[in-house]
Length: 171
Image (cartoon, rainbow, N blue to C red; front, top):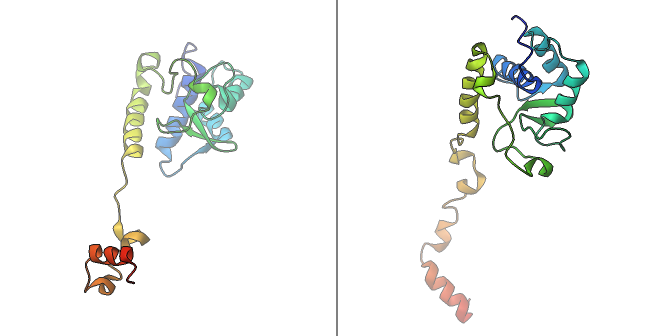
């Protein structure tokens, strides 16, 4: 890819790079900061940007679950030390990022070039898939598997009658 216009915000560039990684490696849940830096460079998204600025964005400016510094963006989440993924609406947010107005979690479509619009569309689909409830497999639930066990113990007596006997202390 060719270098991106300089007026694209660094936070948007980093978000785009992480989205590219997620789309390229759908089985991965997170990516190291070095992998994100490599993708930024590979995609030409690091043109004209200082390495220290990238570091600050990956450490705190964009990360929803760490204390904010200059910005309160909620674009990434730290899943474990040194690893990040894209933010999802149900992710934990550091309390200091919750104060004030709702902050940015995704680049605005009008702020990125059309070549990246497909990543924004992909993200909407990714969020919908992440938020979809998993089908319940009752065979795997140990409590559900107990349903009906012991039924022979109560075969000759209704539950209400048993409770009445307990109350009269006949048992």
